[in-house]
Amino acid sequence: MDWNTVHPLPLPEGYPESTFAPQAWSPDGRRIAGIESGASGRSAGYAIYDLREKSLRRLDLTSGNGDSAVAGWLPDSRNLVLRGPAGVAIYDTVAGTSRTILTEPTFLSLRLSRDGEVLMVQKELLDSEIWLLEFE
Image 1 (tube, rainbow, N blue to C red):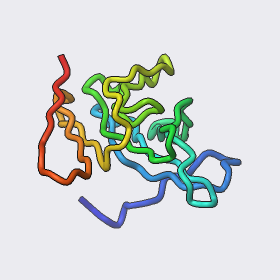
Image 2 (image 1 turned 180 degrees about the vertical axis):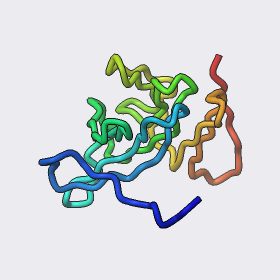
Image 3 (image 1 turned 45 degrees about the vertical axis):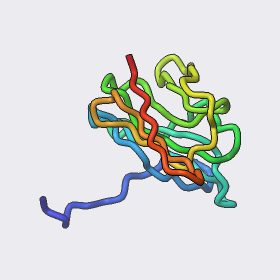
Image 4 (image 1 turned 180 degrees about the horizontal axis):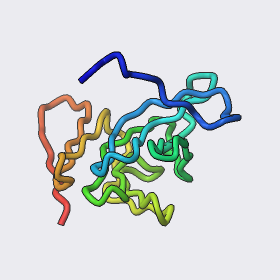
């Protein structure tokens, strides 16, 4: 790889003062899901950057508690696993709908396996436990 060809990707013209923190690359390599923050630094919600169109699209979904997190994309490059208003949700980026799969909203972090079949969640507890959620 020639690092001399690295260049920033532009945000859409007229985009407001904000930042986009990328968190998950789609399996098809076309889109990046992440967290958008306003000028104050507070999370404004979720957004997807489309590399072909060079556009940033806000998702019609907030985390509910201001603590946004993207676990990752499912293998179809259409559905995202993220923290939704009622807990962990699968968000359909085409239909704009979500369904809650886990109603505990207070995880420190979420990570989806590369094959999209296992979700790792981290929660601060006094005792040490590992929980595993497998999609069927």
